[in-house]
Image (cartoon, rainbow, N blue to C red):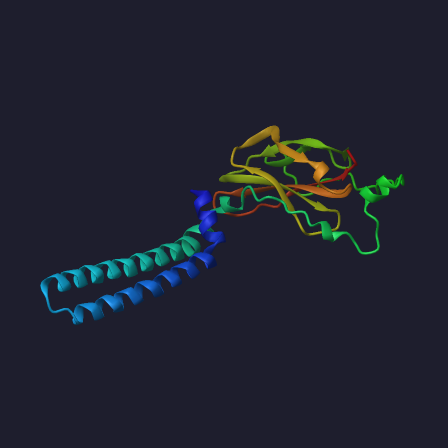
Length: 226
């Protein structure tokens, strides 16, 4: 159901464009059928004209019903389904490297090693027993496939997601999400080999069943070259 809502919400403009085209053709067919009926004199001609008119009217009604259904989906249903934000695939832009700065990967290729900067070893926003990342610990260096452990268990629980962002940036990329309640157990995995080595913030975001987002638990850490 959620996948269907995602599809109709994401491609609403294209769907409406197709419906408008369908409505234009349906109205033209209806006008043609009525013209045919007005010029018919004999029984077979009238019967054929009536059939064409009925088919054209049915086509117009179907297009209108589909348009109303799409409107209801994107205006009333989609905003009330917080799970639509689940499983958002993080998109990494290779063009975000600062102009005039060699990337760590290129420096490694050239045999030049630059030590990672020291990040703070403090978490923020974490609530023990409710919203907590217990592993990796703040300030540690991670690489490759990393399993995340913690807790996502609040009153009126909805779902959780975990995200990362370069240190000092407010742009967050979703790694994964789940509906299950987690108590000091595995939250999921993060393949850090897909990101540029450096300093990052990892956060756990919990949303209740009303769509309200609670303050996230944020853990600073360092990603090293695998």
